[in-house]
Image (cartoon, rainbow, N blue to C red; front, top):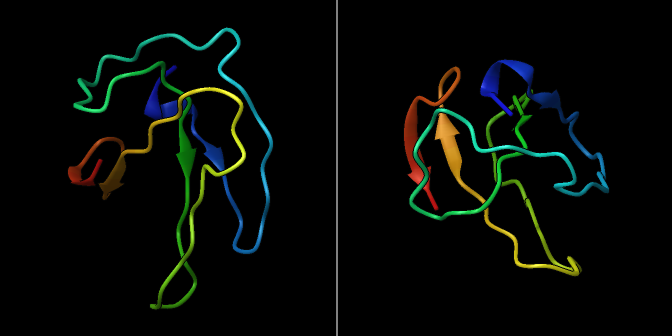
Length: 75
């Protein structure tokens, strides 16, 4: 999967998904794992809670700033 096909996450949304059919993208991640891309653009500044709790498999989260794999903010 690639950043250009990221699924948009609206504020306040809950998403249930999995990595079935996910592939490794051309971006190198220090966290590891298969890639499923989501895009989130807040409507205002503030604190946002993004959680992978409740997953039934190992999960990884990498946060990027900017468009399609800009600077890695956290892993």
